[in-house]
Image (cartoon, rainbow, N blue to C red; front, side):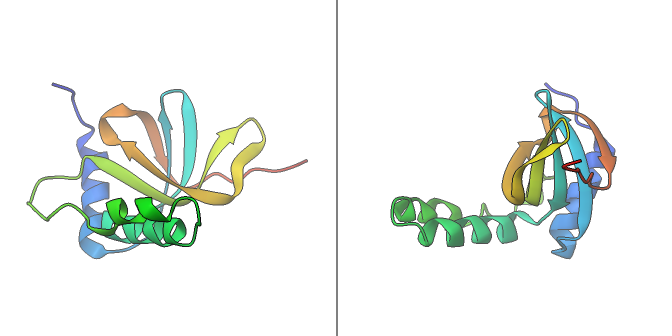
Length: 120
């Protein structure tokens, strides 16, 4: 059974309970550095559903994101990032920010705050 970082789980639980999307976080997972703001799962799902609904090719997949898993009192297992970027050298991908879901058990390092990047 994987060992979870209890502090990171607590941060995710506070984001979920407060329904806040203002917590900046940067994580290392699978060799990638992802930086952005955490969002509650329901807010994240709603936004992804909206983006998919607006797509002519992907609209049928929006329903999968429309209904979040029920509240069962268990601690969060995933981090839900919005306006997030994968940092690659001095470049953030995508430039406008994306929506990422990261399993907490796969986070190998993290820090509070989101890193900016420069084109210079």
